[in-house]
Image (tube, rainbow, N blue to C red; front, side):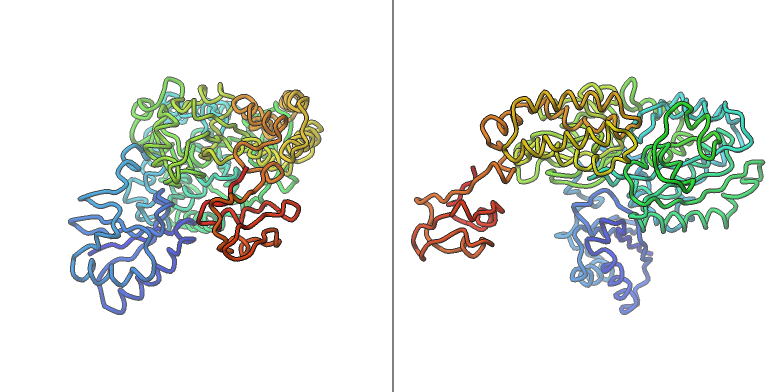
Length: 587
C-alpha cells in the first residue's frame, strides 16, 4: 500500500498544507484508491512547503510547493498510473534537486521530524521509540546513565552550553524527598523556531529524554514550559502525554520497575525573560516571572524549593539517541569541546530558509552556502546574527569560523539556542542592533536598574544615530553603558543584552561613523539618512512612480521628466520599487 505523507508543521500549514491534506483525502475517497494518508512534521525544507511525500516499495518521491490544484494530477498520474510527476519532484531515490541540503546534515534531534506521524506513538515505537528508556531502566543504574551523558560530551543546547551530564549529577547529589525535571520550551528569540518544530514533529523524543533524565536524578514529576503562541506544539504534546499514560509509559511502575514519573504542561504567556530558568520556575509556581539571584542554583533549590534539573527541547531530544547509539558515536562528532550536532533555524537573506542539523565543527560558510544554498538574489554575504537578542553579529570575513561553543563566544556572540539570521549588503548593522536592543528593552522585567534604564539609554542613543542626530561621543557612551549593564545585571537577559551593539561596534564601526559623521546610511536603510532622486536621462515620464507615491511627492507631465519634492517625500521607497527603468536612485 502506498503511503502519502503531508508536511503539517506550522510552516507546512501556513503554506496550505492542511488544504492539500484534505484534498488528498477527498480524491482518495472519490476514486476509491487504497492508500494511507498521514500527517508529519517539518522536514526542514520550509522554503519548499507544502511538501508531500509518497512512499511505496520501489521509490520514495517528495513533491515540493504542492497546492490543491496539483493534487488531482499527482493522484491520477502517480497513484493510479504509476508515473510520478517529474516536474514537481524535489527529491526521490533517482535524483535530488536539493541534494546538498540533506547531504551535509547529520540528523539526530531531527531524526524523526518529517518522517513519522507525530500524533502516532506506534510510529515512534516502530522507530525504536522508548527503547532507550527501557534499556536504561532494565540495565543501568542512575549513576551509569549520568556517566554515559557526561562521556558523550553533550552540552546544554539552550545557549549556556553547560555539560548536561554534570548538571544531572549535581541534581542527583542534592538530597530531597522531591525532585523535578523541567523542559524549557519557552523559545522567544526572533527568527528561531527549532524547539517548536521538534515538538510539532517528534514530541515523544523530548518526553523520552525527560523520562531518562528523571530516572537519572531521582525525579518523579516533570513540567514542559511551552509558550502559548505554539498551539500546535502544545496540542501534539498533550496527545503524546495521553498516549504515554495509556500505555503505562508515564505514571507508576514504568516498565514494571520502581520508577514513577509524570509530566505536566505549563503554558507561558510569552515573556522573553521566562526563558531564564529562575524566572521560568517562578512562572510555573504561579508567580510573576522575575529572575532570582544565584546561588542557590536550581539543582540545589529550584521549583518550590526542591532540587530541579532544567534542560531545553533540543538537549532532551539528543538523550535517547545517545543511549541507543553509544556515547562514543556521539562524541566522535564535532570538535574537542563541542560534541554532536547542532540544530539551526536558517532565516533572513538565505535561499533555503528552514531547519537544519549539522555536526559541530562545520563552518559558518558551509552552513550558509552548502546547506543554505547561498545568499538570496545572489547578493553579497555581509554577516550572520547568531544567538538572538542575547547573541551578536559575526562578519562575513569570519565565515570560516567553526560552530563551536568556545570559538563563537570568543567573537563576542554566543551560540544561543540556534537562531541563525543571514544578512546581506542591504542590511544596516546599526539599525539591526537597534532592533534587537528594542526587543530586549521591551522584554526587560524591570527588576535591575542597569537593565531597565541602561538598555533604554542605549536604545535612545541608537535612535539618535539612525535619525541622523548622533554625536561622535555617543560611541564611547554606548560602550561604557554596555560594559556596566553586562556587569551589573542580575540575569542572562540583561548581561547579554548589549551583545548585538558591542559586536556591531567591533566589526562594523565604520557604519556607525558614517551615520554620525557623514549623515549617511551605507546600506540605504535608515529613512532619515536616505533620499530619492530621479535621473533625467533615464526618466521617460511614464507616470508609474506618480501612481505609486502615497503622498503626491512626485510631479511631472506624461512623457516629461518627473521631479521628487523632498519636502513631501516620506522615503517609503514605493517609487523606487515601482520604477522599471532604473530612473530612481536611493542615496
